[in-house]
Structures are given as C-alpha cells and as structure tokens.
Amino acid sequence: MALKPLTVSFILYSFLGYIPSFGVILRTTDKIVWANEFQPVELTCLIESISTNNPRIEWKKIKNGVPSYVYFQKQISGDLVHRAQLIQPANLLILNTSRADTAEYRCEVAAIDDHKHFDEILISLAVRVKPVVPRCSVPVAVTVGTSSELRCLENEGFPASQYFWFHNNEELPQDPKSSLKFINSTYTINSDTGGLKFHRVRKEDAGEYYCQAKNDAGHAQCPAQLMEVYDVDIVGIFLKVLAALAGFTILIGGVCHAHKHGCFSSGKDHTGTNYKLPAQDNGVDYSEADEGHFRHKSSFII
Image 1 (cartoon, one colour):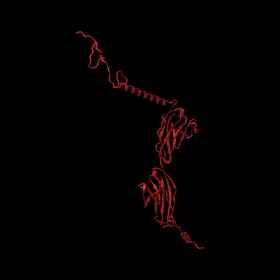
Image 2: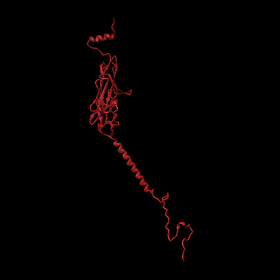
Image 3: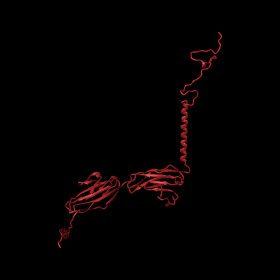
Image 4: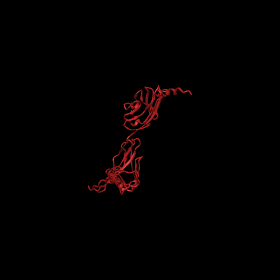
C-alpha cells in the first residue's frame, strides 16, 4: 500500500528527531476574564504551534458587535493607547482597566509559512466596578403598629450591588426568624432593590440605620440616620398644630389689613367720603334751605 507524501514526510522528520508544525494553533488560559476597575489584567493568547518566524499578530476589541483594532502593525491602538502593551509572544496586558474595557477581545495570528496559516481565539473581559455611596432614605419618625419602608440605591456598581441593612451598627439578618434577637420583628429585606420594609413597627425598631451596597469589587455605605418610634403620632399632631397656627396667623393678618384700609369704619359711603350735617346756629335750619332761596325761621325786630 502506497503511503501519502504527507505521511512519508512525517515519518522522515520523526526519524531525524524533528516534528514539523503544519499550522498555527492558539489557546488561552481563560476565555472569560474578570478584572477590577483600575487594576491590571492580562489576556492570554498562547501560540502552541507555528513554523513562521515572524507571524502577524493583531488584537481586536468587539463592542456591541463592532470590531476595532487595539493592537495593529506592532503597536497599541484605539482606546488602549498608553494603557496596554503586548507581552511576547502575543499576550495583551491592560495596565489600568476601566469599565469601558468590558467587551470581547479577539487575538488573530497569521503565519504565511504554515500549512494552516491563520488562527484566532475569542476572550470575554468583564470589568468589575466598585459601588459608590448609596442614597439612603430613612423616615425621621414613625408610629407604633404602622408600616414603614427604608430605601437604599446606587447605580454605579458592576455587577449589580446587593444591599445589607444595619441597625445600631448590627447587621440585620435577611430572615428575622433566623435570629433570636429579631424573631419578633416583622421586617423584610429585598437585597436586590435595597428596600427594608417594616410591616408593623415596634418600639424596639427605633435607632440608627444605614445601608451597605456590596459586590465583588468592593462595598460602600451611606451615613447612619436616626429613626424614632412613638406610641402616638407626635409628628402628625405637631404638623396639624402648626397648620392651625399658620391659618390663624393668616386670618389675623387679613383682618388687620382690612381694618387698616377702613373696611370696618361707619359713616362713609362706598367712595370713602364722610358726610356730616352742619351744626344749627342762631335758630336757622340750613338743612331745609334750597340753593338761591332764603327763608326766615324767626322774627326780627328792627
């Protein structure tokens, strides 16, 4: 049976102690890579087999399906300029990762002297981002037996933050029934949205509360805020009294304003002009005199 030329060559090279490469072959240590923001990360593109002495190496970043060069013609390009370098033979080292680096990266190697002259490998990079200080909302005062909700939220962290609540510097268990100290509590915690809801507030629920946002990159927390619990609705009563005083003040102010403009004066017509009858003098009644006429009301002695 005749042997194929490729088989003969392989046997010959094996006999001489040399096994040739018939094509470029790539591999990577991790196809999915995680890194923390502002930290270095290395994307490995290992050349396992190649015969060409000077292969062409390129790296492309693929974001939202659109490729762009980050290593081309033996130099760093694109948005990795001054932030990355190629480590021989083909590994890409990003010195200072940012959240914008989250994408897919493709290593491409072309070896024109090899029987299989091209190979590529795809690596997914995800950059973890530490949470920022969350925005917390804690009611100032609540009434025993009522429901109340505390809120906590931040939008910077990646992956999305999980939320944990603390009462007087002690972490609240996700399930209050799992702790003897909180077994009578009626709260529920939504660790995904950051909500802490009391279905029936107790006196023991009074105190300082703060929230912590946490992911694999780190954590951040808001300042503690005081929540007071009353047997009666003190705040509601205070607000009602305050509203009544404000209304009374406005009423008094309106009355004083009207009095100042003479709305309560008598003896005036609608134009504000006073009309007074002239005084009677020497027995003459001037009120009955017509203009241009004179009539004696008393006798004169001449």
